[in-house]
Image (cartoon, rainbow, N blue to C red):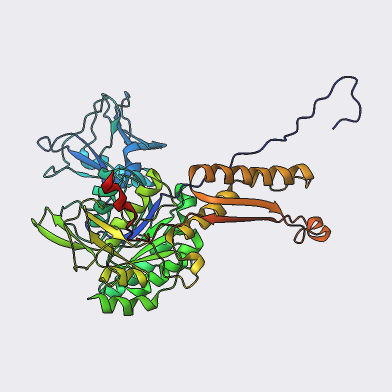
Length: 503
């Protein structure tokens, strides 16, 4: 600030509550296989004809970048000119040879050899005789640049997060043959039957065995820093600008090692996952459930039966694929505070194992599964998920909605305060932060997302020493909205209403 000013200086300061935006919770992260996924295509172009033996086909390396390549066969308009090749960006210009009278003498074979002999041109295209053309025919100059077309990048490269924004046509590129091979084609159909969400899709290679494919699904981080398998979901925010918060690998989370690996991912991404139990019956499902304890997951049993138009028959599908879509649908339509239980599931015709259920039957199989933190499927006005619990041993996080509420609040509050970092510590700054958080809590309470919450400055944590070290601690508490899991009615039989008969 200048030390001297003969005039008026205005210094702008802020003293306003900043709005906290709720994070996008409805983004799905899905991992699986799709051996018939659309491959990359090379851009091509041709000059000349086979009949004249001067046909040349120019082929760029695989990928959409080849569509920017242009070819120009130029008449030098000079006598006794030598054949030469020049490259400017992605434009290849072949200056054709001429005789003493200025007539073009270059053949197709001369042109292909000249392009191959120029390092820059050869890196852009491969030139070869078209079909049965011998290359002996003389070429003619092109009137304008010839564009290569048809190049396309691989739609779903292996071990790479790909963004699918409600685009079923893009998802269809996971199955170019219509045979439905792998787990991703059916998973994408299952999700789209519920909602057209934002998805981060990671395709992995099928291994020589189921165990090898499990390893590919789990993935790793290589010495070069490449994230493979489900680990690639960790790079989605950097590469795609979105963070998946609903995770699954339908068809593979029934393998406990895959589910265990995804448990770690849910912690890192503050996401919620859905796992299928591959149990043969209810007693086995209860035994299998013991292996799980992550608060950020839900166990599902049994699976769905779905009509397959390729085979004209019912096929079995893991329930987690439709749970992913249901979770995203509810986040978009109702909110993250609503569990997936008791909402009709679209696109299903049956279940892989029948489960007994009655709304007042405490001894039903469905109730036994729910009691052991396994969400099942019932049929009442359509097929529905039935159960809201996680396998967490901590009763605070017994419900799916409680876990997601905690994660949504934590990330929404944290990510909204980049503006405050490194500002000079002041009473005004502290008040702005606390007031902003409480304003958000009032908004969420009014919308029904939470019962209530409150933020305050804890004097026990904020000592002169911690403040001097640049540390500020804000405490907040909250009450998530619990699902109505058990509704009771107390019935009393009485004679008092008999008096009505005498009126």
